[in-house]
Image 1: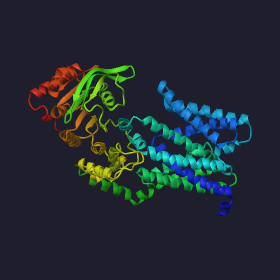
Image 2: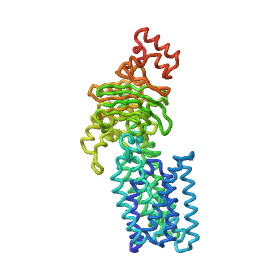
Image 3: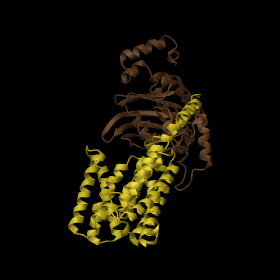
Image 4: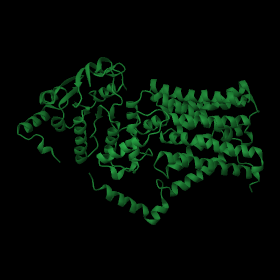
Length: 296
Length: 252
């Protein structure tokens, strides 16, 4: 049953999803908490033309494809912010428009260019396609992400929970926001080879939303998101290995989806089915009310 | 602490108010009053350096703004679903002085605990934000302001969503701060609280402002003149206050 561990490509894939989850957990939690889940999805699509163009110009080079993706993804994010500022359109509308154009352009470029990259692997990820270069990319991305998040953590928290207060305390809000967006796109691009352009954002968002159902503080949420992400990665990889036709991206995200469903059903901030069944929830709410009701 | 001279407030090319003069010294509570849109929040943002002044200037007695400036603003952008406990929110008030990778240590934590005790929230210290009532949240934010330990504190409608007993407790905190020699600027709508507690007032409206001792600024004529209330309302208030205890009968 565990014979897949004997294959070098499988061991690489396992390493990749674990390291990837390590960087994606904090970034994904903030993406969810800042109500940017859909913007993250949009940016991942927006990065496609950049990657395609880099591929058309420079061939299958991890570095140039990463740069191309970063430039296109951030370009669309910045341009939609700009459009929302100077015109009547709201940011979600301008972002949706731009990313759709970018996505169409990217697929167009890939198709015209020919067959060397298969489209399915591009969209849904390909476990077999993890080169050493991709592993280095994933490792660097995670290292940069963890360092970057440590650097901007506090202003990022303030900005998210109380933006007005954050603005009163620091003039560098835009810098923090931009750094965070760069980290988002970097992680998306690092995830593309393993999970595909359609699914990469899933390993950020789904473990984070599942984790939120269980905990009420940031640190445990990030830790739990990592555990959920890495676990889904491992199981999903095994799934795509056992079932020949399942690409790794959807396999991993489906397992994450299962984790999400369980969290929704049983988490204290979800439906809390077990708690309701045993009456624990009602009692604990009542006892809290009685201690608080004392008043000052 | 600071004074404003001929301030022109607004965004871009649209001035909301001009010719705004005031001065605020340590230990003083300056009330800012005006109808919605009269420029109160713009004034606050200009002092915080968030919005640039369109004209005039701010003079800081120390040459530059103090750091940090204690600030408690309106909550329309506050995210109560953020995974954070009350004690953590209070502790964010101590983050301004920390370096990039420096952890918020025990001192901050102790300051947060002491602040929660002061606002009467010790029992709720580990509750997540989304379980708080509006009054408890405002108490928690006052605790954050205590942790900030700032020489200048600006409060923008601090009693907007709280009940009477919470307002009384928080007002007592504000008076404490003033006694400790901190300078306070408070945007308020409760005129009886202003008359009772604030030494000076800045009344804004219709593009201009009046500044001076509270009793001289908050006259019925001026309140009507600056568009804060209609003439018949002002007449009622004038009647009530001449009848004697203008404040007493507004007690809850």
